[in-house]
Length: 376
Image 1 (cartoon, rainbow, N blue to C red):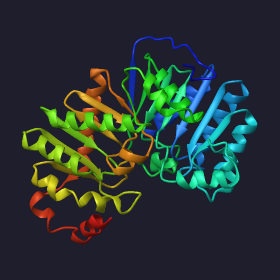
Image 2 (image 1 turned 180 degrees about the horizontal axis):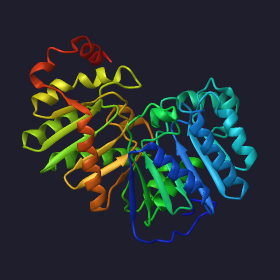
Image 3 (image 1 turned 90 degrees about the vertical axis):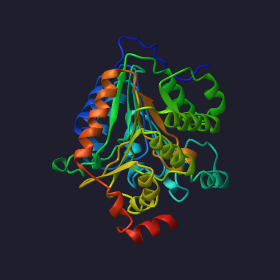
Image 4 (image 1 turned 180 degrees about the vertical axis):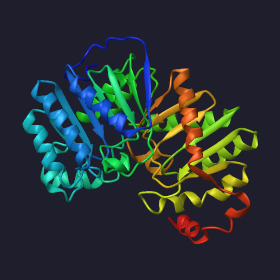
């Protein structure tokens, strides 16, 4: 099964995993990789803002396209900024390919960049029917030899305040020296609107976690719940938009009752103002189960990481209904012991910037927010 127009045979070396919590270092690394690309660049992202950071990335992509690198950029329709059509035109004139995943129906100027080839009323109906299905993945794939993924969008918000950003706390990873064909397959399947069910059948055993079919979503969900229930030592969760369902709540409570060290790190404030209220609605049950909840202070926590005993992931998935049922997501299971250790240390460092909720005092605090959260 052929998945890529410019398929690159990977030169496998020693696996390398570089974890980033510094957005400047991450984006500097991505831009350097783009500048050094030899054959292909595939960039897939949920949000593509129009700011100083995106200008640097667009410039690097344009230079790459002009030196005959096969450049493809895929941006979600909700995350595409109001000026993205002009950004896309710049890239197209330089020789890059640009597409938008399910443009919002009222953004007529973006229709011609849609993955769908339908026209007129047919396209309108298709986009309206697909409005709840979003591409939340964050991926940069260079020459099919190095991959960059995690929770960072193309947005200056992730940068430190001294760089005109908002110092969002994120986690991302650079991966090389391993088989990245599954990433290429997942990107190509979306890009070409190929049969996702067929592509899923060809997915090899891989440390990458995909959810682009219903079957994959069900499998991954069952595996996660089983890991939580079978945990022996610890479950440490960092998540930006935590709105768990009944099954996840019960699995976490069960693990805590068994004596597993369950800690959940969440944002105190969010870019979506009501998310902390929705999360707080579940705090009471979690705290009564012996689960420790920490709220990250002073800046936005946007990372999505999981540590269950010696199993750990970095990616784009949130623990809410959108990620579980609607959005395309991408996560990676860490393979190297030193990477898992670093993720644990990063979690412990984040707790130093956080405030732990007091079980006894919680019931008397933020009552109206929890009530609204329950309604939401």
